Image (cartoon, rainbow, N blue to C red; front, side, top):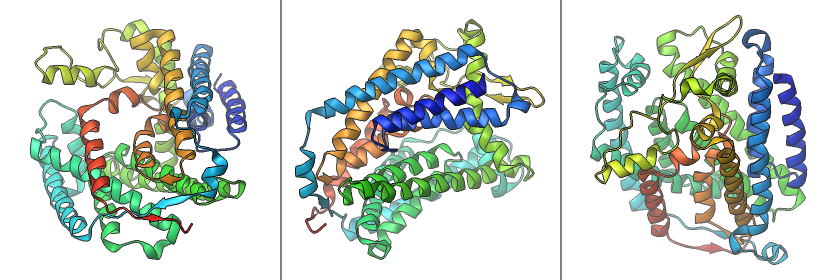
Length: 438
């Protein structure tokens, strides 16, 4: 059945690429591509992991179809800001705003101080997690501690600084990408580049791959859209945008390998293969979903809800007393000659658990509308700026549907709200200058 899934997803991929005029940055193309790559990884490990059920194949296809239908509708809606494309192509402009040098210098110092405080926080937690090897083993044991109940609380101060730095760094990253796309690498200001480098340190200090991979999605999205915008979205611009997608893939693999070697290799040794780890990361969610679908009733009591944790957290902070342990799911195992253990089930598991199959289809349909309407709106704009910046930050759930649910669990949180406020604040602090000479 895993080979049938690969075949069906390949057909779907050809279909969505065709109906989106070969625009591989289109959200439905991302969704299908993610599941296709995951299924291919499972097929390549067929002799080790075994097969999946026909029910799993049907549910995956069932979940993708509403997203594609929603995307078709979303493209027509275009958030009611439909701009005549011919007019836009004659009037392409570039928002050349930059943050003041003094502000950038001060914020870079704050980012550096925050990195030191973050490093100290992670090391102290690693000691709680049983760290016996000093700094070399810090990340792995810090992750163990943070997953338990004895971890140190981050504190309001450090939490605030990390969110502030997040907003600043993403604005700076957008500015650096824009300068490279429109004016070349030599145009990048050294202070702006330092902001990006310092945020990479923050991402590494988080101790996991997730934050870094989301950052790669942002970079790839912004670079590809700006590249195509620069060339008026003509046929030639497809190759220009494609090179940034390829670069994003290689960046993602490089960060995956580097962080995996640092975080996991420090404890489990260096005798692990990159492909083995990568294939488990991208493909194990489908097999875990298969375990869930075979008997979902066994897992019903693990959590009352699997998608409303942000809402419950907000309500509890406002004085409610709703019991809820954590947002992690239970571990399951699968495999024939090798046993793989995971607690990642794709986004589908959480939707089915909380809302059933009708809710799954409805949620995917609505997200298809939202994301493709936003993307179509960005394509229609003469001046790229804050809307593309925000879209690049919020689009990562689309790229990771095949791994985990991020739309409800990440975007509808107070943390995301505060980060977006910081982004808008820094964007409006930037000095605006429109370049009409493109």
